[in-house]
Amino acid sequence: MPSPLHAQTARIGWELRSYDANHHADLHRQVLADTFAIELKEADRWIDRAGAEKVRVLEANGEYAATGILMPMAQFFGGNSVRTRGISGVAVRPTHRRNGVGGLLIGEILREIEAGDEALSVLYASTTKLYRSVGYEIAGFHCAATLETSYLPAVHTALQIRELTNEDRPAMQEIVRANGRVTPGHMDRCDYLWPRIMRPR
Picture 1 (spheres, rainbow, N blue to C red):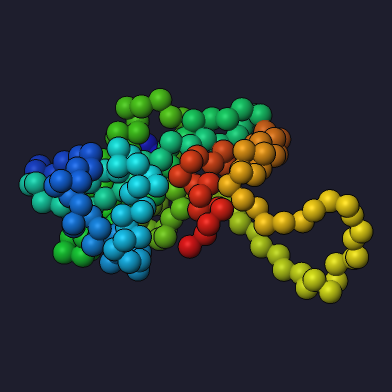
Picture 2 (cartoon, one colour; picture 1 turned 90 degrees about the vertical axis):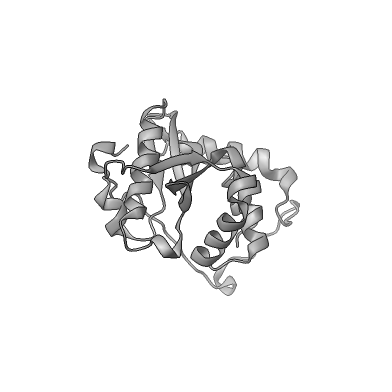
């Protein structure tokens, strides 16, 4: 996990707080919609999937400024699932952008993570400049391949081929975890990530 020493020091009057629907809901919904180009109702579903208790809001003298989600997950190293805290849904209110607020938000989140018992912190960086400034670095890779079906050999099998369903998820997760145990750095996905695999945006 990057050291919080790389992150900005806390500013007077700025505070990282737990999400409070009664206080934050309207602005939070709008900030997520503006940042990720999603509909307002999708922003609500995002919170529902993550769990409101995992959402953090950075306030400036009590005013909503930015948000992020702290997701408990894990990565496989040496055949073991190592506790990791993922950061997701990082969004800064338009009126607070280009003022170092993104770095301040991540710094406060890292301080909270450091106080816990996770060994690592990971995220999918939309921009390298911000996250490198607080100690993260690019790691891992994503591969994609395409193949026309006409090149596939004819297969004769009695097995049924069908669309994956939620009922198949436990068996699929175990297959993925078995592969992860022999693949260092393989993600041990949490309940927040699996629905995104099953039903991508």
